[in-house]
Image (cartoon, rainbow, N blue to C red; front, side, top):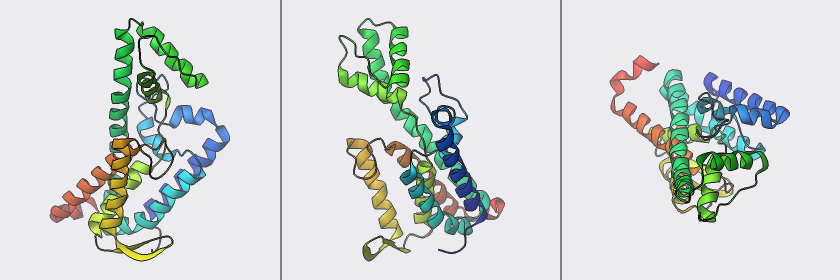
Length: 250
């Protein structure tokens, strides 16, 4: 779909370098650069940005970088370098924020149930830290296993990947080129961008709400996808409604 723009090229190279580095260094890089739950001792503010350059495996980075390659350069050419950078990182930050919010909604009920059952908060956190180290969950008398699992999963599961930022790019692309025909592999029928990307977004909403995985692995951060897409869509919609400001960004 045309030449690769400078910003997209830099993002592709940075993501690949981070991925190679994380494969060499292993868990240490994950501990420092992945986005951990804020109550976790591994959490650092910088992770709100660095997690966007981390990926969980080859298929994860290949899918994200392919989407960035296919849609990013076209979008950057349409809206300019500065706007593209702003949209990409604001979508990634929004993705992280929404995912953290829903992680708290999973964490807090279980934590409060433990407190209500008379368990000391320090004991709860010790069990959570043990789960980080050993992946073994500790259950407590008087607290349902389901609540403990939800609490512990929220605490021990780091978030990685550029997916939130990529969903922002996809949503913005659908705003700029809503009727552009796109093709899915093995389906020789063109689908307008607004329907294909919109349908993909709705599948993620369904999975986030129901907990049923339709696409991708079971630990996919669907709320992050949703957060990135919403910010990408709203930002691009606002820019299109205020065209008189476009030269200020380019």
